[in-house]
Image 1 (cartoon, rainbow, N blue to C red):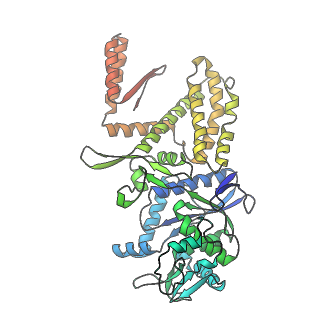
Image 2: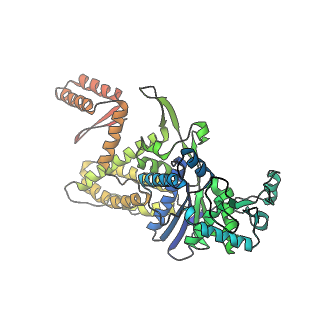
Amino acid sequence: MKVYNTLTKKKEEFKTIQEGKVGMYVCGVTVYDYCHVGHARAYLSFDAIHRYLDYKGYDVTYVRNFTDVDDKIIKRSNDANITIKELTETYIDAFHEDMLALGIKDVSIEPKATEHISDMIEMIENLIKNGLAYEANGDVYYAVEKFTTYGGLSNRNIEDMLAGARVDILEGKRNPLDFALWKTSKENEPFWESPWGKGRPGWHIECSAMSTKYLGKTFDIHGGGKDLVFPHHENEIAQAEGANGQKYVNYWMHNGFVNIDGAKMSKSLGNFFTIRNLLENYDSEIIRFFILSNHYRSPINFKVENYKDESGNDKVRFISLDEVEERLYNIYDAFDKMNAIINADGKEGANLDSDFTSKILENFENAMNDDFNTAAALGEFSKVIKFINEIITKPKTKMKNKKATLKEVAPQVKVIADILNIFNKDPKEFLNMITEKRLKLKNIDKNDILNLIEARKLAKQEKNYQKSDEIREQLNKMGVIIQDTANGVEWRLK
């Protein structure tokens, strides 16, 4: 298995510190609002990594934190006239609801910053003792120039950063690049007692302290979004290695950005969407499929379309998710037909293509072993769906062989479905769910479709083929596709 390491800028053979065990830390959310699609991208990506490591037999300790004290949290709680704890607990609960809705597996440990202040103070004291931090008027800063490898993760040079830094610096701060480890609390702000007076921790120190507390001074994987490479993760390295005197993380992994119609998502541009916005109109499996169809390091672009509903309200259609919904419909349709053949009465014959069916899982694993490439893995899965459809459409005379072949495909599909947590629904239930959704959007009564199909059937029995064709055209204009099969007429909405 190979993993791309942001620190070394190359793929490396994945070797864990302890055989059979993986320690993984992924930066969590600052809990002052609902999670957005960027969070969905990050946590779904690392969920797939988590699940695949489980599948490969690793004992994974996955730590994901909550930042439950910072400037945004303080402002939001003051504006709402509620306590910080009331605010953060509300959004921690909301976070868990969103993760559950997206089918994200529980992590091992979810530490909160406010419950680990003593660990942070201890790390800061070690940094001061090691000559890498200094106190100034109750604040404590990290002396960046004294950490000689600073900038290694983000590929930045201290001299270049100094040249572009602001000239004015806070009183007591020795260098514009120095960052806060501890801040003196202002009026109406929460505080904790420390050797430097009443204050609260800086943002970066919490992850260094909590990750090493639960995973050790050196651990296997640290993940997060690309936006965290600098300064957050760069500062984490400086803090942890400066305090502990040894390598912090072996593999740094970062997921790509999320764009909306090619532009960075932001509230000011009006293209900001929460996970809950997506789940209003799309099943969580559709969101999972879309995100995992992209390699975790690649950027994702949500194509959207603004429109007005029948009441004149402004609405947004996620074209990317509509396209995925159609793909999933076709996949579940193939599963439904495959299940019908497998469950049909009759004997089994010989496998029609054992060379293909014997390598389904091998090809999937080869893709995942190459830096957890879910996009390539789903590409291999698409070949399986194509193969299933080819087997389904073979002549009825080959039914025995079709049954034997698909019985070898089905359990391997189930393994892949369990790893990615996609394709796990009952096919008929999924197909009906999407059909009902489309009927509602098109404002079509299902009974109208069934009545027209019955009228066409009677027209054909009466050999009134002109009327039969007219009814087919009427259905087509309604967006209904029909197909005559040995089992009767099958229909679906475009």
